[in-house]
Each structure stands twice: as C-alpha cells, then as structure tokens.
Amino acid sequence: MRGLAVVLFLAFLPQWAAAEGFALQRDAMVETIRRDVEDTRRYLGKGELDLGVLAALGRVRRHEFVPRELRDRAYQNRPLPIGYGQTISQPYIVALMTDLLRVGPGDRVLELGTGSGYQAAVLAELGCRVFTVEIVPALHEAATGRLARLGYDQVRTRQGDGYHGWAEHGPFDAIVVTAAASHVPPPLVEQLKPGGRMVIPLGNPFLTQQLSVVEKDAAGAVRTRQFLPVVFVPLTGGHGAGR
Ligand code: SAH
Image (cartoon, rainbow, N blue to C red):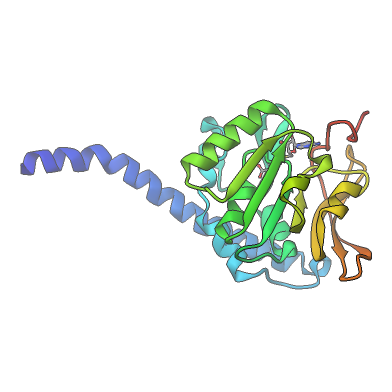
C-alpha cells in the first residue's frame, strides 16, 4: 500500500509542482499590474485598482486561456497571440477595463469579442452574469469549451457580429468592447441600462485608440470620457474596419 502511495505521489508531483508554479506566477502578475497602475496614475486619475478586481485576476488560470506552447509566458504582463490574427489582452489592460466597468455580483455584463474567454472569466469571478459574443467561429467554439471545462457556468457565449449586441439578454448593467471601434455602436448604447457604463477602445482601428468609458445617465443622456491610449485588434464584421 505504502509503495502504491509513493508511486501515486510521484506520479502527481509534476502536476502539483506546475500548479504551484502557476499560482506563484499569478501572484507576481498581480503585483506587476499594481505597479503599472501606480506608474500610469496620471492617465487613470488614481493610483490603485479595486482590490476585488485584482483578486479576480489572481484567481483566473490564465495559462488555460493561451495556446499550449505559450503557457510558460501566460503570466507575463503582455498580450499573446491566440490564433486567427487575434490576441488575448495584456493583464494590466484587462484589470483596468474591469475596474472601469465597476461591476459586482449579479450584474449583467455584455462582452463584445470573446477571444480566449479570459476577460469573461474575470467578470465571472466577480459574480457577474456574462453574455459574450465572438465573430470568429473557431475562437467561439474553443472559448465555449474552455469556459465550460473550467466551471464558468455563469458565462453565456454566442457566435456572431457583436456590433448588434445581444438584445434578448439586455438591457445590461455594463458592456465591455475588447476590439478597436471607430465609433460607439448605437445598438450597444440602446442595450445599456440607464446608469450603466460601457468600456470601449475608440479611435483608428489600425493605429492607437483611446480607452473610453461611455456612461448613460438615468435620463438616458450619454457622456464619453477618455482614459489612456491603447492598441486593440480591429472590430470586424459589417460595421468594422475595412468595410
Ligand atoms: N476579450 C478577449 C480578447 C479579445 S481580442 C480575451 O479576453 O481573450 C478581440 C476579439 O474580438 C477577437 O477574438 C475578434 O475575433 C473579436 N471580434 C472582432 N470583431 C468582432 C465583432 N464584430 N463581433 C464579435 N467579436 C468580434
């Protein structure tokens, strides 16, 4: 029996060590984000993010959201390719966008651009009900399978052009657009609750954009504020870049 226990222990040792290693890397990533936020405080108007948001990033197994061959780079504070010319955003940007959304448990959040599903998982960790739309069928399928496997049951995925939102599940407390848009899509403003907010990279989809927050007040009036220059992959589809 003891022999078997030792054999089992040794068999699972590499997996255990890898899991521990990723956990340590995750902590280091959160620390890096914290420092980067301090360094960019003049853009953000504050030097720290919501602790709940940082804790959520500290829980999501980012190495599960990147291609296998890039796993050892999963916790570096940089974007990584996920295939089809798309990228998983830099952790600092995901943290910042999530912070700007100011969401909490039970909030209904629409995401345009599922990509790997990482941003959706972070929102799910905060207790949100997430509705996320991805235009590339293969990415949609991969993210759907991944989110289910990791137990993110409160995320609903759909393949299609997110420009039109997902009216059936709206209105939403918050909307996050994770691809560069030349303008705020009117259907998304419509699907935002009064008092709700949208975070969206606005500008030239092939150069840089301004990470912006669009707020809809109780009377339905819309106000846009810009935060920081960013570079996102372009929004595609009928209303996207190059059409
Ligand atoms: N949020 C993602 C990163 C997104 S990269 C993550 O956490 O991994 C931007 C994604 O938006 C890409 O996957 C791209 O295919 C998708 N996209 C671009 N235009 C779109 C559109 N019109 N509707 C839905 N998804 C779109």
